[in-house]
Image (cartoon, rainbow, N blue to C red):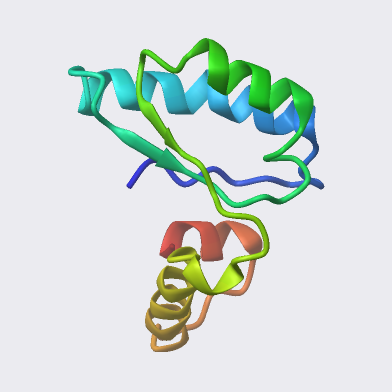
Length: 106
């Protein structure tokens, strides 16, 4: 897994591009220096934006991009991860009270 990025606003194609270039590339180059790392995202609008798609194509030699089949939300492993995280966070005492508390807990 890569770093958890906290957004304090709506995700747009340009913001997603910033995340890819600022975090994903360095993470992949450190953890998967052989270029065999795999990156996966779903077809959310920012993920499928022209700028993000172009950036991923330009960096195709740095890591593999798992192409998400359209209309297949049941294949999204992130839902299982979010469920597990929610379960752990709900058990915390005291529970997170602020967004920063929640980010720290996650």
